[in-house]
Length: 489
Image (cartoon, rainbow, N blue to C red; front, side, top):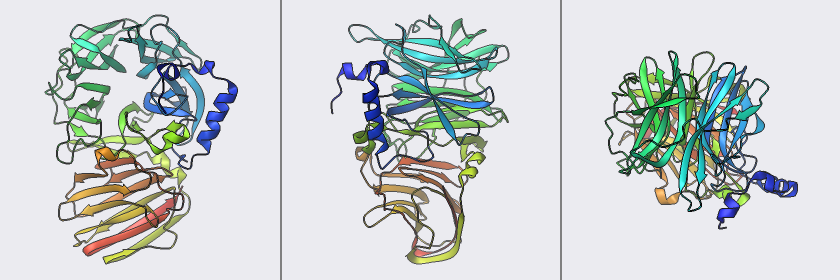
């Protein structure tokens, strides 16, 4: 269905209770609803926002359009958790309600200050000619959960030299000052990140552009996130407009990071290594991080991409968020691993230890639609080996190691209902190691795969039939020893 501008920019209060109940009923009948991921009750979810720990709980907001699987008038929807595993829906956190966010409360971040959680976000406003006017706005949440928006933006204009693609502030504190990076587009239509500073979160000074060695790297950098980890500076962002390069950059838009020395906030210089993708799968974008009370750096991403049709669209909803991941540095790479709290989801364990020799095998109790599985392969001389999961008569998602090319391959050609086929049905990355470890979290319509303890990650939506439940282990052109442990979720 084609959505008109009026339909996309309706407010939720303009809908009747009956309409909202009908929407919710249609969504709940969808066979691809997730069981342990954050997902919208109706409509479209996208970027995680305001990820933080405040008043004894984790708080997470996300971009939300309530009426259907399209991008329209965006709200911040609020969910919270005590353990990063079980999330409870709070409701709308920020709604577009004034001339500065009249066409949507866009992405942003959160920080605690003076006993309140401060939410810094981009207000999207449009003029009569549909010209875009971004404002950086502020709201505060107190310990009762009440959220109040400031009446005026805290940054009311785009600095000279940049276009109106200027959004997604990520805030942090260093010493006595607050800093924020904002995703931007230069007037020559190249992407970058700019830096602001403030003493009170209310009055912000434009410090200038963050100086990287990527002067022409895509046309827009969305959702920047800067932090210090293990005494190194990390800049995460989502560049738009990169062309495929070997096994890299095959999604419509990418997400990745620069790892280097600490950002010098005085001269804005960031000395860094090459850009690296955060996730090698099909569906990952706009991640955001926060610091847990015990000092861990935790990341959550949007398990989806803009401008792609998904099979759940026909049921009135789209997208979910990834599981939370602990981020560390190993060598010159960011390592992502599922947070330890997720082990609380584990039910009965099943284990196998066997040798595969030019064959494909199935095992009792190794089936399912929602599970966690760890599979390790070693002592291999096979040309390739791996697993097929959510498999049935004509469906299977294949995860394998190609030992000849020394590459991990995820293939969703036959995973079920098609999605994003214009961008290919395989994703690959190079890996040369004597042991190969696959750690999978499989939900009803997704898989998150951590390779060799988080050295690489593949995040993907898959849409198989309900009865596609088999797990198959295979080796071709030789043999391999393997051990697998599986927990139903």
